[in-house]
Image (cartoon, rainbow over all chains, first blue to last red; front, side, top):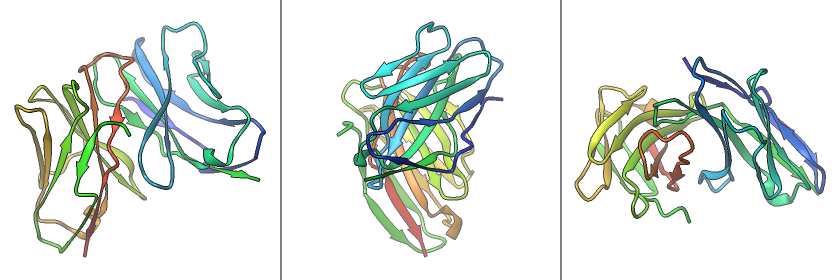
Length: 114
Length: 115
């Protein structure tokens, strides 16, 4: 069964520094997709970035990049030049093969310090 | 704004009662997903509908049911409510059904408090 693990319940980073949020996954499928979502204190879930299992390049979206290491089954989110507005919960999620649903990890709470 | 509309935003009710949560997907999206978010369980997938048909089921209790109507809006019905049902309930939508790279767009959620 698919599983997502985020081992960092909370993290702190200084404004303007880079930060890496860890995510490991478990699946027996060859075809899967990995997603990161951000949940600010206001509660909504915001899509950040996507990586497909067959993508050879790491995904990037502005200040967000995904460090995809397939052999290690890890999909870490890297946020460059952190901003105060990046303070939020971050969730890693996965979709397997023919399944429509996303399965989420427990989340990492990121706090950006001025 | 994701384009997914959920109502109501907040709901306070008593144990044993029944409530209905409503979701309107983004224009053009055919799939609707329901998730429950609580402190102890995290984000749990409940159920998915695609173009009116149930597609996938997660850890949805028998006291909970959902449907997707011809106009593609969806309702999640929660009955015989218990204190433990207090949670943030999200609806999400996507255009397709099983496309790997399809991202989900989430509504702002319904905060349910069972007293």
